[in-house]
Amino acid sequence: AQTVTQSQPEMSVQEAETVTLSCTYDTSENNYYLFWYKQPPSRQMILVIRQEAYKQQNATENRFSVNFQKAAKSFSLKISDSQLGDTAMYFCAFRNSGNTPLVFGKGTRLSVIA
Amino acid sequence: DVKVTQSSRYLVKRTGEKVFLECVQDMDHENMFWYRQDPGLGLRLIYFSYDVKMKEKGDIPEGYSVSREKKERFSLILESASTNQTSMYLCASRPRGHYGYTFGSGTRLTVV
Image (cartoon, rainbow over all chains, first blue to last red; front, side):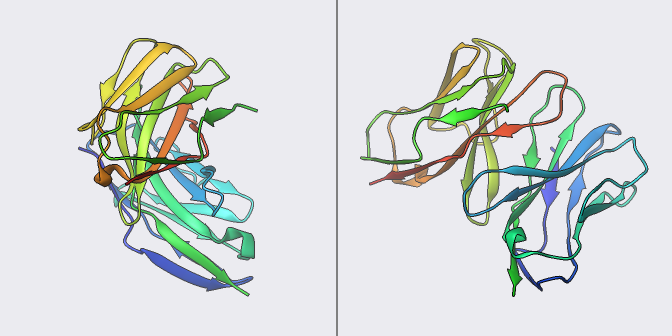
């Protein structure tokens, strides 16, 4: 079975600083997709960034970027220039290719401090 | 914008009641999902559906059932609610062949 591990239950960062959230996963497949979702206090799950396993280039969305290490099965999220609005739960998620459901990690609660 | 609507934001039910959680999406998505979210456990898949009248068990289906009579609606049913089913329930949908999920805003269910 596929598993996703987020080893940091809670993290904090000063406003304008950079923070990295860790995620590892386990799969025997070669084609799959990886995601980071953000869940603010409003509870709405928001897709932050996604990465296709066949792409070697790390995905970037504005202040959010990933470090995808396929051999190590690692998929970390870097948030640059942290803002107060980044305070949220962050979930790493994984899905095999084909019509399969997302598997989520347990989440990391990020607090951005002014 | 795609919308996934969950009928209740907060719900309080008594032990033993039959509970229906409704989820409706407006973009003709084939795939729909029910997750349960608990602190420290993340999101765990209860049931999912690839199409009308189809359903598949997820990781924690015990105590739950689902119904998908129409493409846009996916209902989660707690046959006899118990206190250990107090949780946040999230519905999501995705079109076939696409990797993007759209989530509802969740139903926080309390069973007393």
